[in-house]
Length: 353
Image (cartoon, rainbow, N blue to C red):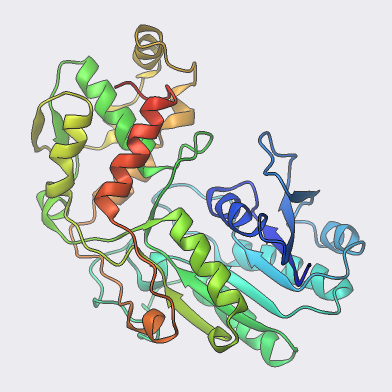
């Protein structure tokens, strides 16, 4: 019997898709997915709504036919380049248009969930106090996460609904249509290095090779969002959401090399955006020689994202004390999950063995 009606904004993205897969099999949930375009691979049980969140009138018009929404999950981001400051104004406008559209028609709204991330703590700009706790002081930088959270807190104070926010760190997931992906980008880098007869050198600084960091398996994140959006005690709170374990790239790196049957190299700092430029023809050759799916390089790897992720020479550790105190005890093994996802890319003939 339907108990909740979800509206997932960003339903065709990695997080939105994972959340849709989490909720849609549950008979308590009816799930609407918002996207600008019709999805190529729709998820069973999800009703997709075509909507442009940049257009306030369009949001109001589309959502006028869906007055029963109880939960909004905001998993979207405004378009942005890698290693660039994301616009607080653009991101806040999208969220405001969506909430306005929902509140114009929905009379049973209970909860709004906001997906944030490590950028809340400034993981992208330099060392930060760790383990980072949800109530830590904010970094003195422009940050769209702050603007969106403040907006939700203010709106919730004037409404009958509550809010929550999840803060994952670097995500790992199998998403063959999304190039902004740690596993597929690293796997593509390894395949190209092997084809060139090179060892698998670590392209970031030595500090990043040795620092402690955390990953977030996307399915674990989806389970955490499900939990905090229906557990009343979680209302008006933010929660860190990672696999809870710690790892160093220097431990995982030889295992990645082994997965491709190639020697593990040394730390050799380089900018992949430059080093891997003009490799499209070589990638096409790799696909042909290994009978891979004929996907362009731009579909399987995002060098700017990989540069930004592997350049961090500082520890990235999030506290999970609050999450556990509130009752969520799920976890995952980051190295095992990374390698399992990598094998799936190989098995699906997106990456070579």
